[in-house]
Amino acid sequence: MKLSRRQFAGLALSGAALPRAALAQDLTPAEAQRAAIFGTSSEFREAMALIEARGDSDMVAGLLLSLRFSRARAPRISQTLEALTGEDHGSDWFDWMLWQEANPQIIPHDSYPAFAREMYLRLDPNFDQFLRPEYITRDKTRIRLEEVTWGGVVKDGIPSLDNPDLIAAGAADYLRGDDLVFGVSINGDVRAYPLRIMGWHEMFNEVIGGVPVALAYCTLCGSGILFETKVAGRAKPFIFGSSGFLYRSNKLMFDRGTNSLWNQYTGAPVIGPLVDSGIALKQRPVVITTWGNWKASNPTTRVLSLNTGHRRNYGSGVVYNDYFGSPDLMFPAQVDQRDHAQKDYVFAVRQFGAARAWPLEAFKRTPVINDAIADTPLLLVGDSATRSVRAYERGVRTFTPASGRIKDQDGVEWQVTESALIGPDDTRLPRVAGHISYWFAWDNYMGDAATVYDG
Image (tube, rainbow, N blue to C red; front, side, top):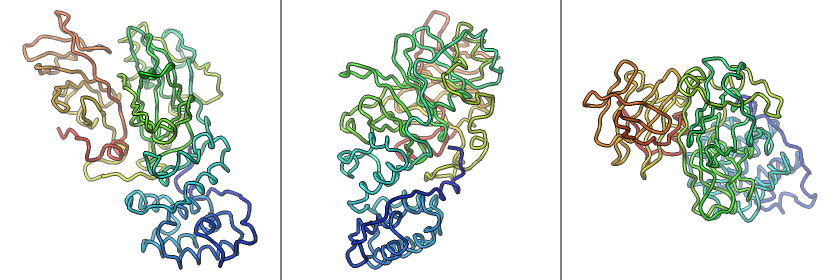
């Protein structure tokens, strides 16, 4: 998944030609849609003429799918798209997809799900597990199927780490002090998962402190979210993997029990048999910080071993280095950039029936922010340099920084821990789950339903 957005537009599929009987005068809309990518040269020309003459924008989604995978036919497909929409984005699949996202009133032809399924199964027959015909019709999905895109890998092409080997902190001589890690502490079980390893795997399934959890790390949107995987009413915890599909530049993960596709950002199933289950995974706190800081605060921590069972270059700054260093996205997603650049970092909380984000930039001015989400007062302790933010319920108290420590309005010092903010009389203010994210993902998924701290 390290191709540029322009390279993706030139990927090609091979396929069988249409039956010879499918001539222009006999083509149905479904056959014309299929001919855009799978037809012979003459069938392709006839299909484009028929689609233009028909003049209905319900063919746009199928044409966009064809545009991505056929460089040779892109100019003629683009001409047809312009005729149907009045828009001119040339052969730029990326820009056409942004236009499609901004125009949800355009409903694809009823044949689109079957066409998309055929296209994607040619890339990987295992995609059949996710795109069952009975689950991909418009009335069954919770996201627009036409906005589901291929991420460039097959099913499990980004392999999850399931109960991986861990080593003691002192044995982790492969780590540098400034390497970033995901830090997790549950019921006294303290662990670190380096981003330089997790970037290659994007998912772990573990039991930490007796709690089954999965870390879903979408490298494209900069968010690592820790979910509880044991759900009431289900006998076993969910085990997750990476499907190979994306939605608005966010990974769609899948559970190995039902093969439902889940939105990584919301922790809810969006395609498949669990769509109407009402399940939304509960979040657990996780922090990004440096290995040096985490080890100093948690000397008993264990950390991922390099012995993952996979051959990858786990060196510092290797995985997704070009993407992380670029202001551009690899896949299309609409974003409001009036106040924030699309890859600015925010700390995101979705709790207490509300959603709110704090730009990481705000913590450059102060490491301590007293704020609230809905009617719940929060304390946020952050460090923009290490991408570290922890949130706590603060009740009626307000806090200020004091020489690297935290004190309340009465001048009493409190201890910042992974589970709670602890006062000298052992008063505990509980941690609140949240995660780091690129702005574009927060804006795209939360939008007007969320608020943003403006400092």
